[in-house]
Image 1: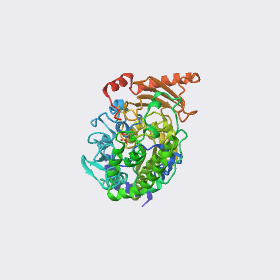
Image 2: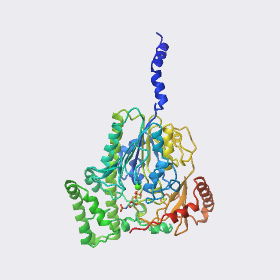
Image 3: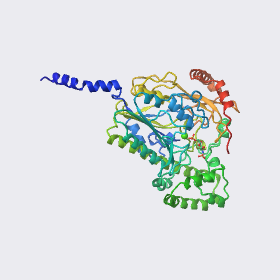
Image 4: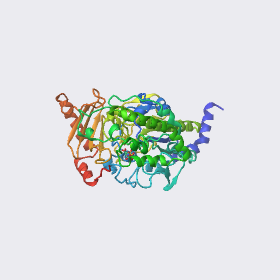
Length: 535
Ligand code: SGN
Ligand code: CA
């Protein structure tokens, strides 16, 4: 028999199977693992080159795929960011404008669409949205912010406390779910870590290593906010002035009392007791073994420490615990990648790593996020998908979390609904498309509230950023990111930037129109949401 005949025969034999697979639409459709951590600033992903810590497993995604250096969010806050991820719509359209507003699960989301198109879907870890998640065959979510030690999960709506460390448990549950899936269907799992969210409690195995390191300080740790407007000056997220001594820096309440240190937030000491109170006796003993000597040392030094010394000490304490929690996140990514490989899923699975927003790691003297300034506007984004994404790429494209839903649908071969405002960036990564947006639009609403970051909106282009702070002020800021990447000097009133200012205003007006935002929206949310500052 000739070669040709054999292949024709083979085709004829396999044809019914192929046709059935095609009819089901399941052939070649990729699996999706969307990994999102909470408050993980790109400065703490070593692939971004800051040298602060090592995240070898997350970095693998960049080495074997693509690293986005200018990915951003549309609203730098947890729950709103998750609502944008699910809906592909800006906050003022999906309704989840801040952490307090109700999220309407009845609206469309990309997981529901994947489900309708034959995907198995799961949501595991932090979601921070009220109500039972819709669009998922399986959900195991943390309650509200979640807990680091021995956390409570809502498993398909039923509450259960699970012994262990939250980051490891979230990884275990994700791998278990993938292992027991229906292998005849593609899957999409949202694997959402709570870490490195405040109040930063690392796993016991990381305590010693991370508390014995000294981290380099950002250049503007001692920023005095000259050259910026009222918003930066009145925000309450300075490491020296606004961090909790017990809850965040882990100074035991008794030591605070002895030293005469007052609580900053009224829940400062209570947070410490609550978080450490979740540990078993053995866990607590292991924790104290590392923290007690550090605190004894602090007690000795405190009386002679200047404000500068205290800022430095608090920054180190912050980094030690924050980066300690990142270590377990990175290990989880490693376990996931190894698991995919061991199960033959590493080629046809898209793995995305990102955070719900960026975070200040001492830049401007701050912790937390919310502002449209770079460290919180931007978010880490790394994607591996060897079937389509060439290894070792870097992209400076202005992609946003708004684009995730349409991008994932695109990979799954499903058309995104017209109402989604983001765009698929699949073509950008595989080189089929060269054009992309030249500006991103941003909104923030949660004010007055914790950290007191004023309401604002704005745009960022490759080089410039224009921000409008409103509600109880009416202030504009313009930054030249090329000359002033740290955003230390507002040049809005600088005559040398007159032309740029005009162009940026035009662009902002056009984008607000394009994305269906307006002053009426802003005013409506001011009327609707009256948040009380809880301090
Ligand atoms: C808590 C934190 C804040 C943080 C918000 C929102 N305070 O309130 O620092 O900004 O969550 O974070 S804490 O003292 O309770 O830790 S978000 O990531 O969920 O948006
Ligand atoms: Ca967050």
